[in-house]
Image (tube, rainbow, N blue to C red; front, side, top):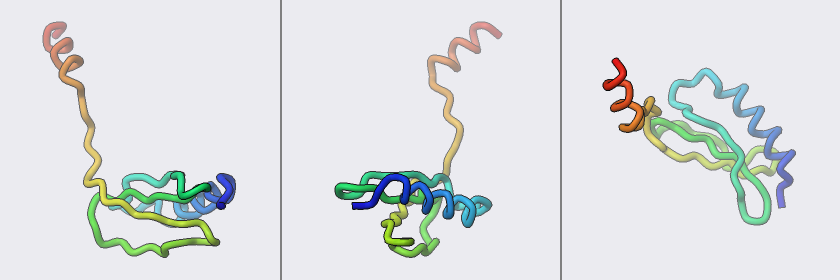
Length: 82
């Protein structure tokens, strides 16, 4: 079982290592079995990462590009007000 604190250290390391890569859309802590792991979200496939760092499982998931979303209710209110 991997403690959350250990997973957070690996997450912080990955954030430092991958922070300026455009294809990385997020890095976070996830449940893994009875402990924790790290997930790296990517906008496109292709980046290779180790399956674990310091014993902490590392998962990658292709989520696609991140785009701003404005709910329809907010858009319609703004059109009426403007």
